[in-house]
Amino acid sequence: FKPVGVSRRLVIRPSWESYEAQSGETILIIDPGQAFGTGTHETTQMCLQIIDDLYASEPHPRHVLDVGTGTGILGIATAKLGATEVLGLDNDPLAVEVCNENASVNGVANIFRATDTPVEKAVGTFDLVIANIIAEILTDMKGSLLARLAPGGRILLSGILDEKAGWVREEFEAEGAKLIEERRSGQWAALLLSR
Image 1 (cartoon, rainbow, N blue to C red):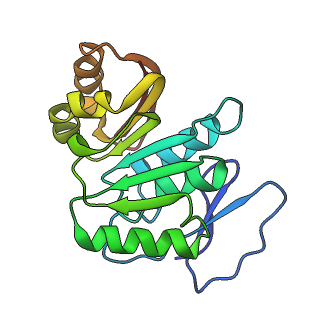
Image 2: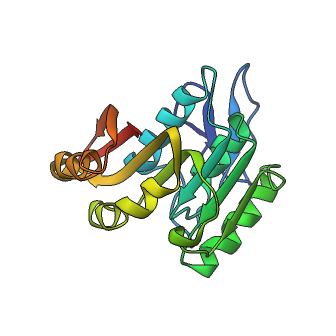
Image 3: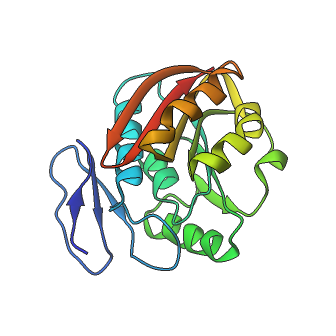
């Protein structure tokens, strides 16, 4: 694990590697461990690229919900790029612990917090909902995910095998979501939709 640039502005580095940020770069410090999401997987990288794009122009998302947060890498990226409140949800208590540690290490513990609250019980709505899980779980959770999305908000979905992207898109469109962008990398897809 070495420092790696994953988008125009985002660079991921493990804590034991030194790296001097170049002008305009934002560093995410994430160590490989027991929670999912070190930034090497195609789905995580596509999400980070889309997040970078979303925060490149105003107005960008202020209130973010990261469902199945793992290490917290996606939520932490939004916090470092300009979100003012980020909630990470994960049903794995270890992931929640790792996530909150990573938020501290990255200096965003005042913005980002993780909990094991189910998405159905999360309070409020969010400008951006992120869920990098798998297609079947995304479609099962579509109602709960969209219920957390503020009007005009965006939802970023990944963890989707390429051949299932059309099915996931149709399932969310049937609930009133509209496709903004679709990306593919390797055998994976990421979808950005609005409501």
